Length: 293
Image: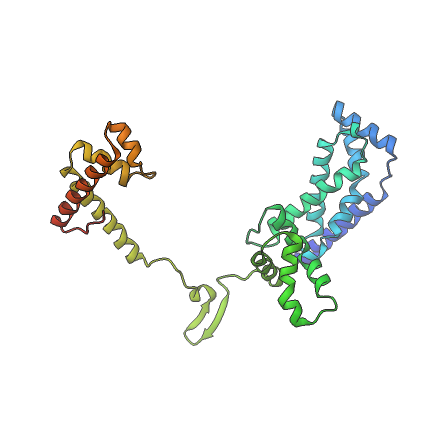
């Protein structure tokens, strides 16, 4: 089956599905409540089917609001159906709320999650404010730009959107740039010459050190660590304990706490530490190492 035939088949199938959903009978409040109770208490599959089938037109309507994101309507409707089933599983009939009111949130949330996962190969923000920015940026930008001079729009629109949504201007600018252009492959051709074509990734500059620099730094760290361990051997037990807890531990003990542990004054701890550091410096210098302490 070629692509054209497959697309025609998908379109025909979607239209048939939409017609079936639109022809499903509406439920009045009493019938809806009875079906919801029957499903909740007895897990009656027929009740669930009738309840969800009657609300598939709601799924289609909500999916249609996100048509401009360029994703498959069939896929969005399927995701909305997942949200509808989730709503049915969580619905509490005793609260006297219409099922359509409750289900709308779950349907929209399911479709939005699908869009965020599939609209771009780059994963977007998943916080509530980032989602709100993603789905409302175009609408807010169009409303703020209406009737305004282009220069003032460029200066103020990101600031106003940031205040409206509750994010930083940097987040608005980043999202705006993402929505204004499609994803670009790093392997896409950028320049062509007689020697061949260059790709975008060929012109990316990495801030990380070069491999030989990283290896050299790793070797230097190992050498310094070995020299320090050898130098520590010139200290007696009390000096070694103070240096380890004061200088070589992540938290770094205070003079007062060490004095309490050792049963001496904090001034005495400071004197022992000073003497131990001087001994370490001398030992490191003798080994040709830099006195780092």
